[in-house]
Image 1 (cartoon, rainbow, N blue to C red):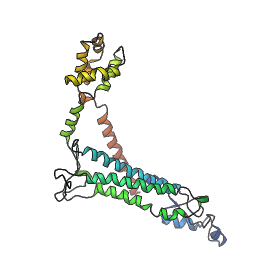
Image 2 (cartoon, rainbow, N blue to C red; image 1 turned 120 degrees about the horizontal axis):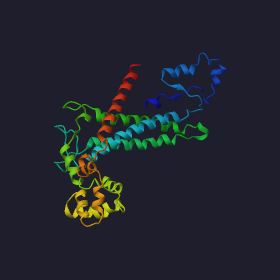
Image 3 (cartoon, rainbow, N blue to C red; image 1 turned 120 degrees about the vertical axis):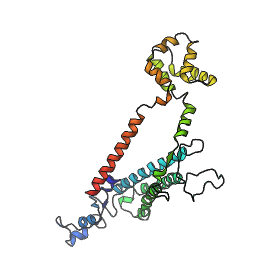
Image 4 (cartoon, rainbow, N blue to C red; image 1 turned 90 degrees about the horizontal axis):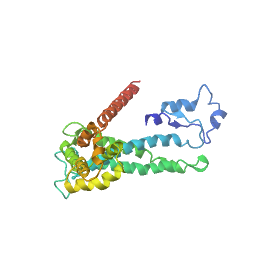
Length: 298
């Protein structure tokens, strides 16, 4: 948004963009440019080319960056709204003493703020259609888009609404964003529901790398999964049960390194670099905030 805001342009160059009156009346010169001086006060650059209207691209790029930011906040709202569902329950909104729940289900807390984040993005998405409509005009100069462009600030207002939803102070202290809670126990329960099967990926790859004679992916999917479900065991245990029936499988399993076997028995350790990537993302965000602060000081 900052980058494209810096590229916004304006014009005081006459009806056809050629400074006819300014040059004819000698109020335009290279050393004293009326257009440049006035636009500088508005924080805008002079458009190098214009007609009766400004080229639409610079404003469209800026507004698209606003739309992209709005979409990011909408995505956050959708993710949290889904994670707040009763059957998942990994995220909870802060619930003030005077806040009402569902109109029909007294036990239920509606994800109203997360819904608003996502819903406001949908409003913005449709507002941006107007920006696209004004990218073309008759001979790049008609004023059909003039009344339409007066709606463009709605995109910024909607974006500000999303930010206000996240950052408004609560009566209990802090912002809505800071009062969102994570139910760690429910996260563990949800993992436990599928932990017997989530290691199917490394299991079939480990088998293939150990020299499994057939299609290991097909074997895990069509042979081990049914055994695991019927016997209520994890896939590693299902593989050991299958080894008693399938010739050569025991030899293949023996070639799998012990540290890999340990991983295949512990789904909670199958996280790759998730922790490192999360911390790196936080570092990137904090660095960006520092850069913004430095720019503001300048």
